[in-house]
Length: 254
Image (cartoon, rainbow, N blue to C red; front, side, top):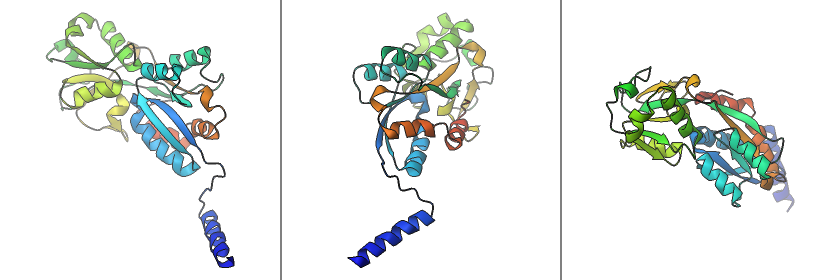
């Protein structure tokens, strides 16, 4: 018995010497995340779990759909939205903790094609109208879809492009329409096609921020998570330089 105890003590001591954290109250947090933030969130969650000992169970989807699920009793404890209006509304509705909201990222809209030389750096491909389908996220569910419609309106291209629009429920579905060739080009989140400071494939036009409302993305602690240390820990982790570096690497600002 003494031998077993000694080996355990030695192992714990070795872990401490190696700088490994041994969380006293590791827990699990259930998180709802806007689809545009899928790629960076997967990296952040991996780092968070490794650094904190907590676990995060994440569901991705359109902001509108996640909002409806939260109101209908889905067991989410933290919400990362694609806008700032929805977390504020959840706070007003009594589903989010007042004072917990903050902007974790500011997104960018991009017109993208998986093929090189299809999208020019000024977006003139839209005016030329030599395409069959243009993918966007549903404007009523996804802030990036609303930003796409605002862009088309300000360019005076609503009527011209309307017959060619194909809508995905989320920005993830809109991206898949383009990636699979069901649409030649589409409005997607920069984070879906950008990593480590460069475009990952195809051709793209980063839409000027003056053409649509700002894509400020807020996080908020939901009422279900107010007593869960893991929920608070994740929100705090999103503000660390390690997490912010990941966020910036996907083209977001904050």
